[in-house]
Image (cartoon, rainbow, N blue to C red; front, side, top):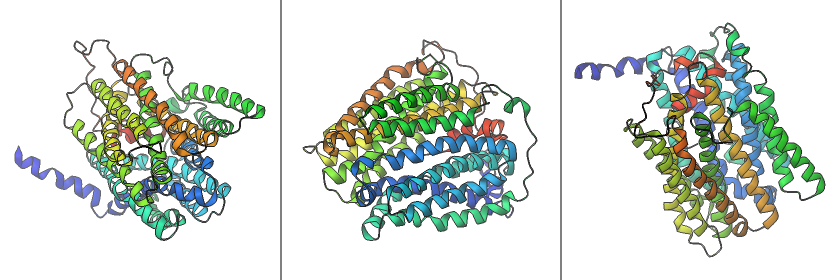
Length: 497
């Protein structure tokens, strides 16, 4: 028994790094790393970027543009993979991402920067989908958990060194190089992946997926949601009659789009899966919105350097990774309990930043508070991923996991846009950001209250859960892009984003 345990890893390693797949594995890791470094680095550089080519009222827009475009790119990438397989998307998406890096890195004004961020969002959303479809097509089933583990680990290094490196690069060179410095990584990743995808066959059509009423119109709904979020962010910063009309139209479009993208009952907090999807949106919205404004808070209000202001992000990443690993070693703990604990810790971290954000705040508290918030995300995010899989039938797992991702991206976009509106209205970050943090803390408390409804059964002491499916075999739903991309992403991805 023990001998078998020692012999087992060798074939898996050869599946990943043998002559036939070595370049594919390295290329996939580079694709994930380029998105991760960009995500972790841009937030640190953003205060200097906005000070150079815009005003603080524009602070939210580079984030909103990326997230809104990623919503569309995710769904479009899934449909593209369903129709044509991952071969073309896996090459075109990083090229689009690289083009966005070039446009943003050479920008001299906000309009060009936002165009670059839109291209990056499209590329990042689609390349994630295509990468997981490629895994299903290239790697044997027994090796896929190891591939997912590697891809998750590809976020660790960017999470640890991305913020301080971006700070140093911005201070010593320019924020432009936070974008331009990643272009060689994109070129190398594409060069390694092209040989792997050149021999893939075009997939046969799957009528049951493409003809499903729930799947029809998803691309248009995602585009509508992206446009609505952007319009709502613009209207929130312009207090005029025409802006109010735009806001009303944007809200209507967003509601109609989300009805298509999300399961029914999400906004009512219906027990079970709808609450799980809502929890994903609340977790991501609270954490990533505060995460986006934390460097601005520390540099503008407390006059920290960009390098130092990125360090709390590292602490949050470490807390996330540690908590995610810990919960994975305790599979028998009820996930709705861990979800409630995660929301509680996240709320403590977000509310605690109210002691940091004002001019009289204690800046060093950002370190322990964001570590606590990261621990909460490690517990809560993993619990949501488990509950989505547990409460979905095989035919619905792709749609439900995709809905959870949509809730993540849309909620984050709206809340970051709300922060931008507060900055435009109130001016100084020391005044505007406490208001945003109070809102985020309230949403975290709402998550604490809703967490118990994430269980399928009302009494966690007597519930008898359905038999667990083997989630270590993501091939069950990864064989098609739109059905499987989100299960794979939730299963294998991400320490901190």
